[in-house]
Length: 212
Ligand code: SF4
Image 1 (cartoon, rainbow, N blue to C red):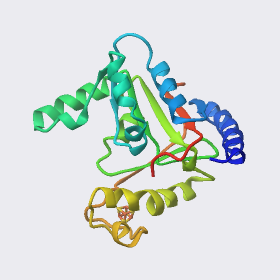
Image 2 (tube, rainbow, N blue to C red):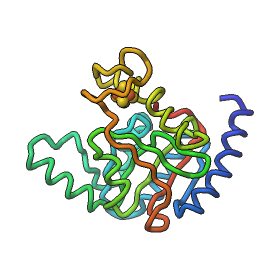
Image 3 (cartoon, rainbow, N blue to C red):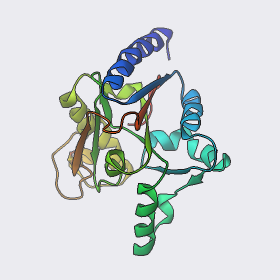
């Protein structure tokens, strides 16, 4: 990435972190995803902690899950739950976890998180449950306002996601949202304005393009 863009990202993040603070969320800035990985581990803390995660290309691409396991934490692997009983147990473990790790679909310059979810198993733990939520967000996901953020999700993030998930949705075929209902991944739109528990939501902004 060119140096000018790096300076721009840093300056933009500085203002955004102040806005997050007003919304009772903690904000951090890392130039690279390597630094962000270290920050995640620092925020998870020492000792054996329980860590869960929501589906996220950003988290997958960072390769941080292996590091969490190497540190001796108890990583709740959602892909291991198949039966009804296993899924039920998984939900209980995640809601009681120490840390929930996720990305966000967009973040506004005013410090609001925008997430569009299908089943809701990502946004529900952002809202309630785990002791802390660590949100990792590439600076490519910063938008001016909520309207732009929802547009970003529907027309720029969901299309590649539905292609990845082999969905038959309009966005997968046409590259733009067709407001579908069948087989949709857009059932819940959650705007997180304030962290009700001050500091529970921590946002790590990364000066790279991460995720969709
Ligand atoms: S509503 Fe349907 S078409 Fe629009 S982004 Fe979501 S999945 Fe794609």
